[in-house]
Amino acid sequence: MAAGKGTRMKSKLPKVLHLLAGRALVQHVIDTAAVLSARQVTVITGHGAPEVEAAITASTQAGSQFDLNFVRQEPQLGTGHAVQQAVPVLRDDGLVVVLSGDVPLTQADTLTQLITSCAGDKLALLTIDFANPTGYGRIVRTGDAVQAIVEQKDATPAQLKITEVYSGIMAVPAKQLKTWLARLDNKNAQGEYYLTDIVKFAVADGFPVVAHKIIDAAQVAGVNSPVQLADLERAYQKRVALQLMEQGVRLTDPARLDVRGKLSCAQDVFIDVNCVFEGVVSLGEGVKIGPNCVIKNASIAAGAVIHPFTHIEGGEPGSKNAVEVGPGALIGPFARLRPGAKLGAEVHIGNFVEVKNSTLAKGAKANHLAYLGDATVGERVNYGAGSITANYDGANKHRTIIEADVHIGSNCVLVAPVTIGAGGTVGGGSTVSKDAPPLALTVARARQMSVANWKRPAKK
Image (cartoon, rainbow, N blue to C red):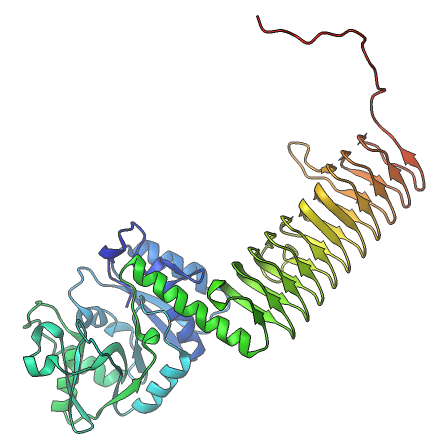
């Protein structure tokens, strides 16, 4: 269900498209459904439907193993009315799991247990005990058997004291669900069609109703405000941090880690505070990440050190634009690696150096204040401070080739396309626009001139 407006979010963006850990709330729910090997995912939209549907389609179409479809709830007349809109696309031989698009942290294992409780012949409800159950539908039992779910506004004083509540998640055979949905009415305090009313229909029909109770409140927590979204973000990140530490990763402070994608770590990885990982990132054995780094779509090999405040932004995972950092490389502080940066073993990229769509072979160094764009750099090259590759002519990009053992002096401009031959040296301050031969000193700058007794212009 993803039809709600989310008024308390105070945002033009539909609620289910707000991001948690870098993904839309509803995308977390859909991804969980995929883990369950669902054959069909039906999204019920309403407020902002075109935007929601476009976003979900764009993020799930590649490689999805389920049929994705949408139905619209217009107007929004309650949860029962929402699910009624899905009736035409539900398959009679299926088992329906009803999820909420703003409840992103339900675990696949929990839903698997709920489905097992359903077993194809029961109505299974996911429940939890809350010390303060205000606002939730209460689970009314006779012994162990569930008799009804009573909404807050319709509950008696005795029912309001019940602490076991319905999470909004259920598993139910599709064929029975359809018959019960057809019997819903809106004769209640809110004038809405409650999905929870199907429980009393099941009981009346002699159909078993069971509850699978959990204790992890984060799994059933919804998002209705920026405050709640921030709380769930921390809950998610804490879960990720604990998993990493259980694998042996050293985190200086688990509360100051943000993983907004997939982070895989080998043995003896160390991550300092305030680091953000996006997309798909892999860290090899013994990698050290300094504080305040942002790393996206990158593979960092064993023994590499990423010094503080480094920004790594690779392209799509698995593409030529993903960033690769070789074993033993030293990056930063304050370095920037852009899409297509491929760094070999023991490469040094220092402070305020930017690398884009370039390969640097083993032992190459650009230690400070430099730009390497669309370049192929050989082994042991020393690239001086203030030097740049002028790779763009205003219409097209061109490549610079710097062969092995070249020394580029400070404040040089290499105007691509150009090749600097192996073992060559480019004198500081040179603008090189023609190929330089191997083992030669190349200097391309105006002759120094001094004008005696020259006076600076004065203000009039």
